Image 1: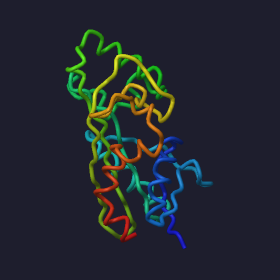
Image 2: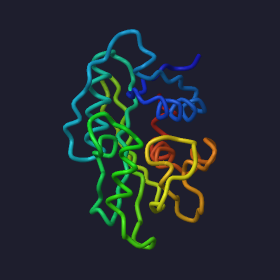
Image 3: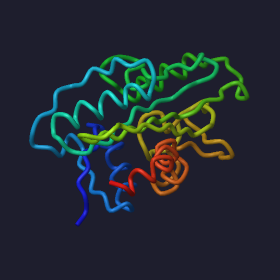
Image 4: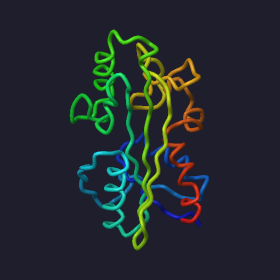
Length: 198
């Protein structure tokens, strides 16, 4: 029997990726959109990806008395001193519009040479369990920002992000290709031993 784990997200794209990855550990993931009981919006008051992931995981684990896996992820662009960072989802406004975020990013990088457009996707994953210490790990995917959007797969900044050693954007990768190199996968690898223990 698969163990149920709550995935602390209302983002369909992120939930789908997590469910696919958790499946190989015999863990059945349920996103916040799958739950019948409403979940209050949790204020992410941390200053790092790790702090925000822990805040979400612990708050929801306390509410449901179940194991919760939460992540906080985003894009760090070196030429922008690490922006948008923890504000990646709401970079262009609180409505969290992917297209507007990408347009703002391209505008901010206009005139920046290709070799100076280095960036990375960052993901911090936290596991919170009632009665146990929480766990958090970080994974990254290095790359650069393209001059224009390409591809229709994925979500967020995927149409602009070119992983290192690739000529295609993340949005031009199949879901399986993306899951093999993504920041989320790299963070999951680090917490693999904890997932097995669940």
